[in-house]
Length: 273
Image (cartoon, rainbow, N blue to C red; front, side):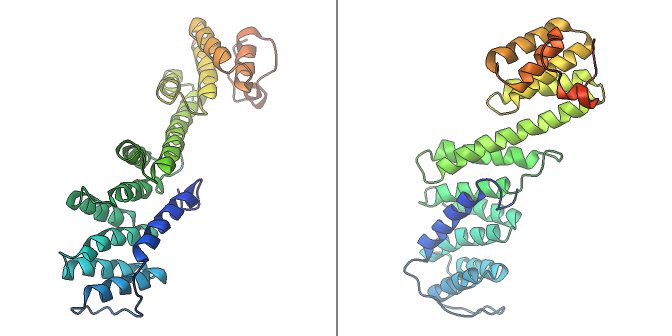
């Protein structure tokens, strides 16, 4: 999931707002050099900020790390640690950013910027979420990291955006289950399809995929000749989503009355009558 994805602009705004706070009151010096020499901490730190502002991310990250290396006991070193992580994040080097953030969290558990560190780590996972056709391990990591931000820092500036992304991530995981379920159903592996649809209904019951999952259950149970289970799924669908197209389709399957489902028209549906 790229930085241009849904609600991505809020993440970037929050991240840049943090950087703006870090920049205030600092002078800016021009230029950078690949050869590092012992320099005053302010010069190193502001040179890194200067390169970050020019989007020279590789150079800026090294310079922030050099602040920490040359002046490990200064307040600038702590700032530089999280700024290095942010720089890696901005350049899409998420693995390096996560390593830097884990180190910051371990070394400074009580620091005032800890909420931001957890949030930035969650964004590193969130922005790597791939489409539902691929492995969703990163999606689960994003969900866990975002939920941790909400749990640990419910009143922080990052909690609201994290809550929104939690819902989007859950919906994405449900979409993955639906995609697998449809694949099984299309290949007449109905038991496997039923297990996937039930997972959506039981584990992701607040998502937008539930009405379709219930309808697909009706289809799959009827394909297996288990009409009682199909009736139960249709009843749940009708009770919770009485006005949905999915219920109209299920009602037609169960009674032969009403609107003919699009799946039957397209040949995707395996008929029962």
